[in-house]
Image (cartoon, rainbow, N blue to C red; front, top):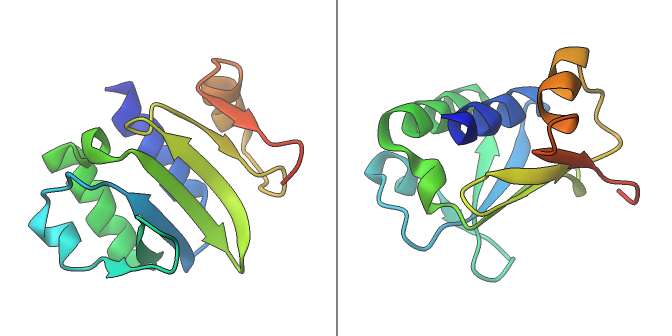
Length: 120
């Protein structure tokens, strides 16, 4: 499923300890819900993307299809927005500050699944 693969590939290009903000009111994954904290952003839960949490999210994507529950996702690092995704993480925008590998560019940017922000 392309949404799963896209979501996982986005997570893998993020710096360690980036912060993931999820808007997923119908999320039912107990494993992930137990790790999420309430954020300062209205309607968002937050999770630091350390190694164990990153692996947890990837496992939840593969085993529980959690991408289907995600309305909006923002990933930030040191208060900079690095990724913003929508509607089951079917598409999104990455920061122009991220160094993207050629395979990522060819797979997602040239396929209109992902844009590179000209602003952030």
